Length: 138
Image 1 (cartoon, helix red, strand yellow):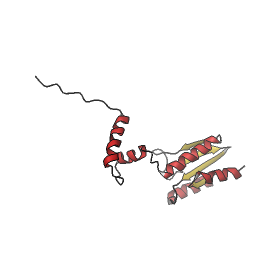
Image 2: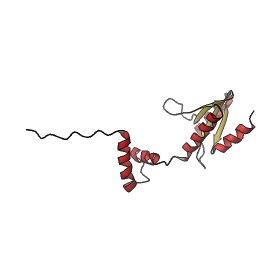
Image 3: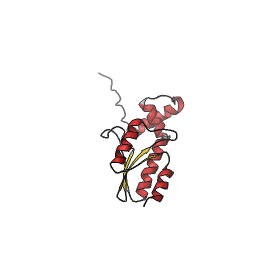
Image 4: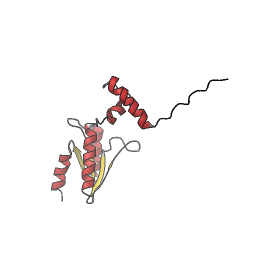
């Protein structure tokens, strides 16, 4: 007679992540670039500075009654600005960067293309830059 094997317990994604985080806290390598370590750093609340700017800009447009979306691949052309928004009948294309980061040449080119097409384009490192522009625009 064959011995009965214990059926493995099913775990949901949250449980797996929590177990990994427990190990990561003890042994995690902060320079590791594997998917699990990146996930763990994000889950632990260490949001990237650019992501903070993106969220703040999205919230600012929504607070003022506009519609704003974060562009995410796949399905978006490379270099497309991080945020496409509409406020008071104006199209906005905003590239968000963390402090001291510069946009790539392709990102600059895309902002220029949107600007030539009639959109308000902007490169922001801080949501205060956007607020200052919104205060002076009719």
